[in-house]
Image (cartoon, rainbow, N blue to C red; front, top):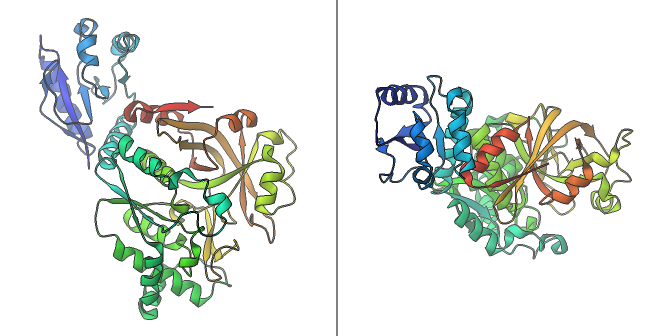
Length: 439
């Protein structure tokens, strides 16, 4: 699905340069955008994701009200290299001062990223997330799970109103029953085709149950409208004799189907939006800031945080389900699939022991109202292991200011993206009408 762009020209003069530049943009950006018929400024623009000015004239100084009335993201792409022309910075600055936000790519790659974001906006508006759950909060550890916002109808309604995306829920219990009816032979066949790296203790029943769950989910994906998937895999783990990690990994590998742990739909929409825009390695995990002290240590069953000589208050432990988190195979520098770590899942359950490349990361997440996007720079410094705990292999991340992080973070679930993406998040904010909470 491509972004739909309406080229706009100034009514007083449709120049030859406008036509030449528009043809150049069509040639360079055809893979990412459908260019609709061009219109004069002030005329109806119809259904689209954005308008594009292939040429911006001095008339813009006298046309700010009409430009603002377009009520669409405004792309200013006026050079032959699919960027803004340097000579147009003054006009863009003038428009910003008048309350008209412009989007001005400075290289071809950024122009392509902008169009990917616009296409993602269009895709979200006509798609759905599929979540398997029955009675969230009523299963294991209700004192924790009943506090999660993503179970609330308000969260589901907000995702629909802000992005147009429907959240469809089906029974996890019924899915587990369907998986149990699949033959061992069918499960063994699909398992062998994957050639996944597993530890020696990963028994044949673990493999069979994981493959059956995958096959059962495949039968449930009955429409191309489904762009994301998840389940209440911990709180309602009594409905399944496995965990969904392998299934989510395989569906992402095969179909680019976005996944999320614990059925966290707010994390799911965040992940889908960011991956579609950047293609960067990313995943959801839990944060345990060193500043949280005993509350974090007790929950993860560890005696202390690792010793950090320089500014320990600015460090955060990253861990989920006993390890770093469900970082899929295509993003991992190292991966071993292991037997379960948490007590609340089935004895035949499994978990991913993955590692991401160390270095710069971006920590992000949508807020509850889906009006803000957190943007925090961090550094993944390495990994730490605690035997017989809920942190068999966790990540150690440093941020610039641990106190400020604590004051601004939206959730215990965050999305960790490999690399620096602050500028892209700002662009996402302009297109998706999100305020960027950068720190």
